[in-house]
Image (tube, rainbow, N blue to C red):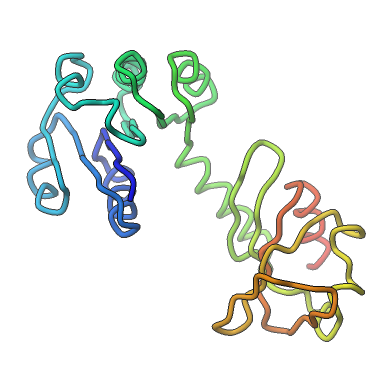
Length: 217
């Protein structure tokens, strides 16, 4: 269980908070709007109505005690910037801030954010990739170059052994796991035979994998 401070309970913050709770984390939520916090308070270990641009309010939260502090504000970049800076000054272990543009990302990193997220951009990218190919089930960007994709097993692979396909050498991607019906297979050897309904979790260079997926159309 991780201790999380979540500042900003708009639509993104509410959704993120719910997911963090489901994963067993201890979450403290904060927003300056009473009408936002009151309906949510009963679900969280701690819920506070406070303006986090005021340093004294942050000091009262014992910022160093949290494993991560998330600034999920999306409609007031100046406040997001100030809060990010103040959290680092108060000894936050890890600050994750929300941005809408590349310029915002640069400013947030400059003010001390350890990580900057783009919820709208990430959602748009995932939708674009999924719409572009029926083979893509999901994907996660690890950095600017590498990603993990969950894809449907290519039809031409069905009935063939992993050693014969040799995706690492021939295609430049690693198969991490295979979902076969209700079973998740994590230990794959060269003798594994792919099935039509297999779902593959693969890792590699994003552009390389996308090119491979596009050739499957």
